[in-house]
Amino acid sequence: MPEGHTIHRLAQDYASRFQGGTPPEVTSPQGKFSDSAALLTHTELTTTEAHGKHLFLGFRDTDWVHIHLGLFGKVTFGTPPVPPPTDTTRLRLTNPTAYVDLKGPTTCALITPQEKQAIHARLGPDPLRDDADPTAAYARVHRSRTTIAALLLDQKIIAGVGNVYRAEVLFRHHIDPYRPGKDITPAEWDAIWTDLVALMREGVRNNRIDTVRPEHTPEAMNRPPRVDDHGGEVYVYRRTSQPCHLCTTPIRTADLSSRNLFWCPTCQPA
DNA sequence: TCCTTATGTACAA
DNA sequence: TGTACCTAAGGAC
Image (tube, rainbow, N blue to C red):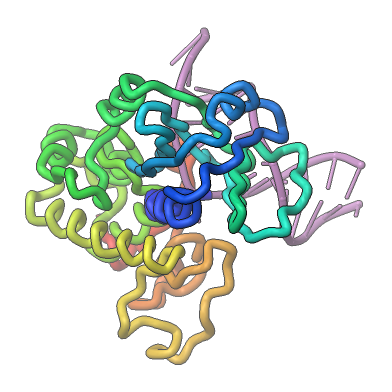
């Protein structure tokens, strides 16, 4: 269950284990990717790349495996002995020193460079990519009557932000999630973008999402650390009815376009 | 054993 | 706006 930082981390991890060296054996124990796996097996993994939540594995620089984890996809790395695959293992790479399994992805497909280019073209700037242009994103935000909360999840506008980073970055900038995009000032957008770059880079480094400032950590505030399956310390995400770390107001939750929204009504006033 | 839930997206109406 | 799809874990029975 990933946001962009997970995908960029996966790009690094696939590369460190399989790029160069012995070309991996490529299999699809589940069968859904078997034909493509047969074309790729024992060819070189030459590069890996992430854009937002999309992962690309480049074989021979011309054959790209396009992976999107969706809500359920999981990637597991390991070292030999290689365990028997389960019937949900979509893609397995194996070389003499490592293996990696992919399960439950929304997408795992062999695509051409042209098809890859089309995917980049429909994605907005990614705070984790060097080629990202935040002004292009702001231009769309600024002319939209849609809420900033919805815009931040729109991958055409900004790529890689998911439900956790959305909730947390709006809290960190005291912005009401229901505020229309057109009311976001250039200074606010600049601050949001800069913050996302820093937060998501740290997310790649630590492979988890932490958003609380040093003065609000469990140690600094003498409170118990969060115990949750997403792993990080946060202000509002899935903290429904718990007291805000800053003002003790109960954190609120609501449904917004079928996604869970979390915010502090005091720190993020309408 | 069934039901719910989840860091997501695409397509139909 | 609703629904379908991909999977696994945890809780209610």
